[in-house]
Image (cartoon, rainbow, N blue to C red; front, side):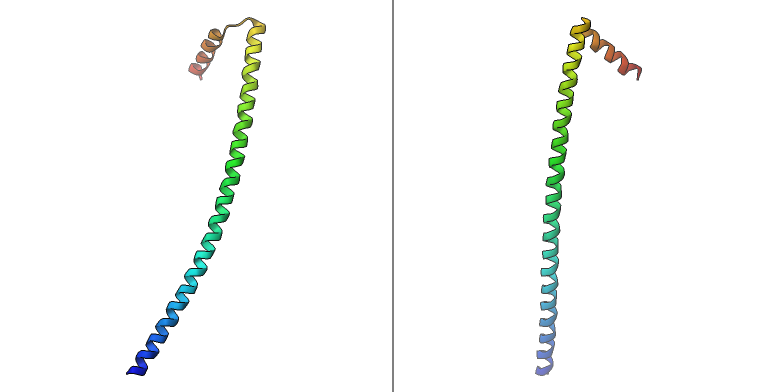
Length: 91
């Protein structure tokens, strides 16, 4: 009976060691995947911020063009706002 118990314990120990190895491999794989995903998120965030800066710059240029045209055509901002509200209401 003692021999059987010793063999059973050794088998259980082997199973636990294999489980431990598998868990370590899985943790290592997940840590690598996490690092890759964090790097990808960082890259996408940078691209998004760059695109936002580009759009802000374009909007600033367009606002300057609108003001220049208003000055050139002697149009007041209130008139433009009323027209844009009407356009929105029509749409």
